Structures are given as C-alpha cells and as structure tokens.
Image 1 (tube, helix red, strand yellow):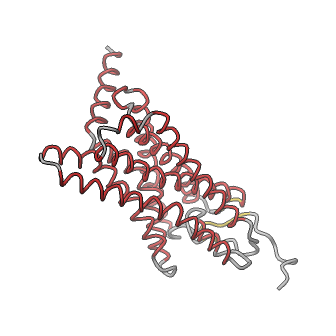
Image 2 (tube, rainbow, N blue to C red; image 1 turned 180 degrees about the vertical axis):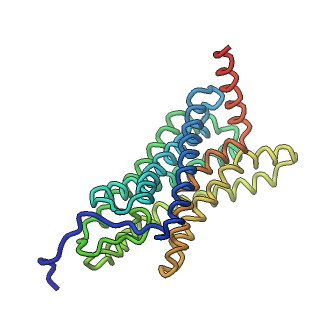
Length: 311
C-alpha cells in the first residue's frame, strides 16, 4: 500500500489513564503531591551526601547518582502528565515525544545499571571487607558511575532510533500517559518486527545483566552472613543492604510486571508504569532516609547547623 497520500504525524494525543474528569482531577492531585515529595526528597538526599563528610563513601556516592537519576526520571514524565490532566487537548509534539522517550530511557536504564553496581558495592563491603577500601577507590567509583550513565545512553539512543525511524501516519492516539516505546510502536505504519527485536535485545542487556549481577551479589551476601559467628554482625550486614534490596524489588518488580502482563490488560499496564516511573522515584529517598542511620544522623546534623546559624 502506498503511503504517499497519508498525513505524517506531527503530534501525538496521550489518552492517559482515564477520561473521567473526576478521576483526572484525583490523579492530578496525586501526581502533584508525589512529584513535590520526589523533588524535595531526592534533592535533600543529594545535598546531604555532597555536604556531609561522613557520607563521602562509595555507597553514598552511588546513592547520590541514583537520586539524580530518580529526580530527572520523574521530571521527564510527571510535568507533562500534570499538564495533560488539566488540559482539554492532551497532546505532545512529535519532537517532544521523541525527547521524552530518549530521556525516559536514559534515566530509567541508567538506574537499572546503578542498582546493579550498588549491589556489587555491598557484596564487596560484606564479602571482601578487608580489600574493600583498596578495590572501591574514588577512581573506580567514578568509572563505574560513568559506565552506568554510558550504558543508559547507549540503550536510549538505540531504542529511540529504531522506534522513531518508523513511519507514523494518521493514527496519533497513544494509549498511555507518556511516550513509552511499546505504546508508540503500536501506532507505526510499517512492520515493527526489527524494532521489537532490538528493544528485546536491549532489554536483555539492561535488565537481565543487572538482575543477574544483583542475584549473584545477594546470593553471596546471604551465604557470607550465615557463616558469621555473631548475631550482631549478621544484623549489621543485613541492615547495610536492606534498603537497597527493597528499592531493587520495587523498581524491578513493577517494571517486570508491566512488560510481562498481556497487552490486553492495558489499565494494569498503565498502573504498573505509573508505579515504577512516578511512585518509585518518590519512595527511594524515603526508604534510604528512614532505614539508614547514617542518613538520619546527617539530616540531624544539617538541621542543627541550620538552627545554630539562625541563633
């Protein structure tokens, strides 16, 4: 079939989660509150890590990177969603959609790699404590962090290129609240097999590899902890990685469910996408703040300094 007389899409219509005005208003309030907490929580965590010398360790260096990824990951999606929830024309330009897709993949995939590196850091700290300071130097941490961001950029560029190079004509209704690759591909006016294959391979690279490293790391940690002779040592070891393990479970759990459920379960897919892209970036700094003694101590020190300055 010839496409010469068909109109090329210049903007997309985001159908969102619901077309009910009352639900949209409720979602607006929810998204706004979550986003404000996300911005405040992650900025606070980043500032604490940067200003408190007690937090100048590899674990908190990677945590600072994770908070940065969370902050921009949420900012890529939520402001546009908030605007569309109050707007009659819930549109986004093709260029805007492409930018959102590129940044969503960059920060999301970088977070996948960062979570894997953080598990490796905990593995070294617990299973090879004597050599940990010699292995996890500042230079190594910087290289690992750069590798995480580089892998996110690579996956983002490859997936975005194969998604956006397809022709999009006439149908411009994205059945989602942001520009996610599967939702965009559903509108393509050409065969999407090659694009789906590339996305699958990139998914294996950025999901399966980090998950495998996380499983191996925590498997080794569990074996090491059970070999410890003292209960206090076991509890201390578990406490240092409990927060990270919870964050990993929430992020990967919701992401895997989102991409493994049948395509017919569209509402459930949107809700899972909302959880890992909107809710999880808010929960991460809360989890690390509430379950981490070092972060709570740094927060008290910062509050005391602020109070002293006012006096």
